[in-house]
Image (tube, rainbow over all chains, first blue to last red; front, side):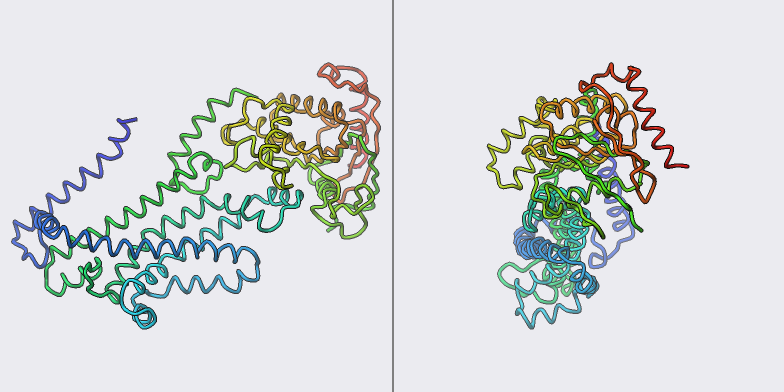
Length: 281
Length: 234
């Protein structure tokens, strides 16, 4: 088990170290100016020096991204439930969620500033708009792929619409919903950073989007890189958190749904248990 | 296209009736009409004198596959009918334990469907249908996807439970042997659109055991069913 973990983690780590070494070597050998491309060592030093600012910025952006993501999770799932309730509603409204997805967030960010004022609220809304579509699309797919025989059974036993939704449809859709949530987690951070670039303001703890823009304007390329690193870390963290919660909720039964290849580990685990019991009739 | 035509069938309380016919002939449609899951385009399906779709009589239904909820344990899958009827948790679980013992799953109650073999999953499905003592048990080729040995074992179980409870049972199958082994009466259907070719009351002893499959009487009755089925072909 430990051996396999090493085999999985070692190659990307080695690749990263090699890439950083090449980067460092080339930048120094060719004497590339700092403002164009600082070497990794300088970026690391800056990240440590500006650790406080970066951390607070990450918190600011993380809060807005998290709030936008939470809005997406709740409203997106609710909207999918509404759409799944009737074919007519789905036909009438679903195209607009696709349109919403294709609207460039940079283009409507000024509108958000007009409506919500500059600051965290507009940024949260930006994170929400960018991340809601995958939640709606995946939750809808999940709600529409409930086992028809089980639906019949619920009808046979006189279960009403709400009962069927709570006991059958939502739980069966859960693997799909989490697929959407994991995509949304990464997008929410992107939405928040882009939102800050347009709609954020330099409060006590400027967000990462503002740090990036400030560093860019002052040609502090090393700080720019460090800020980008912060937003990447944020995205990975949110993605990982959602994945962890999903794993917890779905690990035991998901194999039977077989809808998502990234759950391979869980499936293998359940597969082993199944072979152990298959000797019984 | 009509799945059924000119069909007239009466089943008395306590009967075990097999609906035998080629795959896809419309037997399943008939079962869904009786369950009240579909409404007939013409004619009527009555259960206890009332239209079937009003669903006044508690019905148990077993599909061709187990169709369990993968996130629930065996126990909570089996308890579903009473849960939907609003029976409190402790009470419905106690009842579910009872039917799970009936189908021989007393050791698997806390497992998840993914951890079970196909035969065990089908047993859970059967237990779920039996919960709450339905007055009518409808089975749609329930064991068709299982291996022969498992299937025979489940047939034995089903027949033993019928012997005990005498629940009115409609059992759809395309297997002559299974129909003869399980039922007291076999309705033989033609290919689509299904017509009734024969209504055969089997001349077999009430006790169905594995030994019966080797008896001359069993061979005679299966031949009767086979002849009736063949008529439909020609």
